[in-house]
Image (cartoon, rainbow, N blue to C red; front, side, top):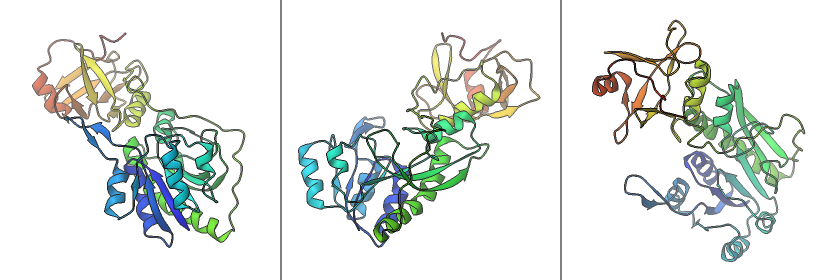
Length: 312
């Protein structure tokens, strides 16, 4: 089949590469326009734009997929199917109708659970034991289209969102190709999603990433892992923001107030609503992330110090 692939971030790369290596023909890649990132805030192409160019596939970067010029380009490309992985823009009906087999999305959850932009992050926040990836046909309603297939993935106790998404991206790529293979053969029918078990996973905001030390230790741990690497879990100390990496649970460390630090030359423990956690990496403002012990030595903390004390 003639395919136009739509995707933007790194997690879309395994699917793009697997599709290009398949028997199908990827005639173009659609991705988000350049965005400013890094210290210099220079415009940078998306990972999919870079990899698409490396693979010799024409790259389209419409500001909005509703642009008439883009719609006309897509019609001229005449795709049979448009596979999608984390493209990041809403597709209007006239665009959805162009491909005979529609737009087939690889979504990183077991639908109808965690519809939305951040399914892996919300699975971690909720403490799910298992998640997965689902292929489905895109419709106007958010992630509500009929499904084709799934793969499951166990969530490990120390998984960050980045680690979990990396595994789902690799496991989901063959599922996406297999779905397209069977659509071409005509022996695969989409099945409506169940009406129960629906949950939503909106984008994780900076406020979502603020650590609530008043929560139990298990919830603090989940929040930090769900926000790693992006947007990055954080707390405050003396009015400055600290980014905090994954922590280690310390059930035997009790008696610390929520946010209270107990530091030594080689450790930094923080109290929660239940028991302590050991800090891993800490990133002070304007500096690189460092091990908690190195941060403690450089910060020269004195007296009773409490993280998050100046937050409302």
